[in-house]
Amino acid sequence: EAQVTQNPRYLITVTGKKLTVTCSQNMNHEYMSWYRQDPGLGLRQIYYSMNVEVTDKGDVPEGYKVSRKEKRNFPLILESPSPNQTSLYFCASRQDRGHSNQPQHFGDGTRLSIL
Amino acid sequence: DAKTTQPTSMDCAEGRAANLPCNHSTISGNEYVYWYRQIHSQGPQYIIHGLKNNETNEMASLIITEDRKSSTLILPHATLRDTAVYYCIVRDDKIIFGKGTRLHILP
Image (cartoon, rainbow over all chains, first blue to last red; front, side, top):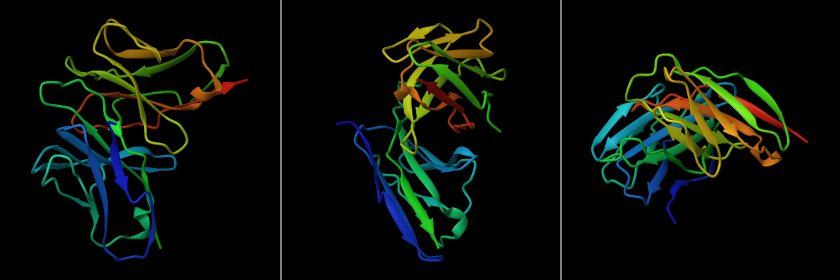
């Protein structure tokens, strides 16, 4: 089954303790992206990647890092989490090479609480 | 800022057609219009997309004006399960989701 898988789905942690949210897709998609969603603010893009070893900032990249060492994985790293990063996070992927109009496929979300 | 403008909320009676408008007056010639919806806190679900011709699939129809500055998503026979936030976006590598339209289906 074609899907985008995020882990963990829920996490409660404390300020300053490094964490990684993994994202994996099995559709051989070139494009991957991370979003956060906060009440009243809609979905905001954090980082995106056009392909392996290519990443770029979205609208709200501060406090986050990403890497794209292989096509299927796009982890989101919070080196020193703070309470303002408490949010619902979504990973998405999209086929790009030769198919410039394909829609995004979203994961089920990761709810992070930073105390 | 979001490149699209949508009403904050809309109501529609169950069984009737729901027509959700979107303005994208700064859309460029090669940008597609996409519609997604989000039910509660689930991941956004793709509905439909188009460039300049009207499109229809099993979920909805998309009507794009000739000048491409606006579009309308049509859910032909709305059900309670269509209650969701609907997002209209234009294709871009740096994708921006606005606040969407919260659609309430009234029984």
